Image (cartoon, rainbow, N blue to C red):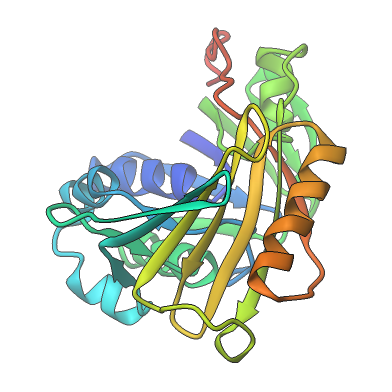
Length: 258
């Protein structure tokens, strides 16, 4: 099957591009290794700018955010060197979402526009010189353009920039409401943990996202993570994930691959 664009990865970047291309009438396929809904390690904070962009693409977002129980937050506590500074962000509140629900809602919106997504499969072989992909389920696809939106471990990026390596690492855990005695109307940011990084507590409906991230320094990150959990009075297991901490691919296009 031949398509104008094939997108690898159905996270926010891939699915938003898919929606935009679908609205323009292009033939587009999205491929993701997971089945949706799926969990995603992420605090799930949407800035006013990202909310405005989302609305400009899909229109009225009230039903979307209501359906996924997005939480509006305008109180922020900043903790630095054991001192707490309180201030209220009055004009542009954040929205905190559960990424499992948010990403699934975006996939459903893409499908409602007639978009096609192949879930639970990955690229078995890519022949870039022939504009051809073979998927793990045996399907053969061809394309005019190929987009890699498959995250920090992207196989597509290795074709464009084989030397790129992620320079960030984060740890995060979901803490149930009853296990953490903090206000559900306030988000917390922890600074001064180490030179390049910060911690966070984001309240969501039903739980808190607690984590720390920054440039890779595992010993310091684990030490500061212990400090945060000790301060909060919690004990839990954390998941980890590499990410590009301010680092980006400087030449993201090679031939017809982005």
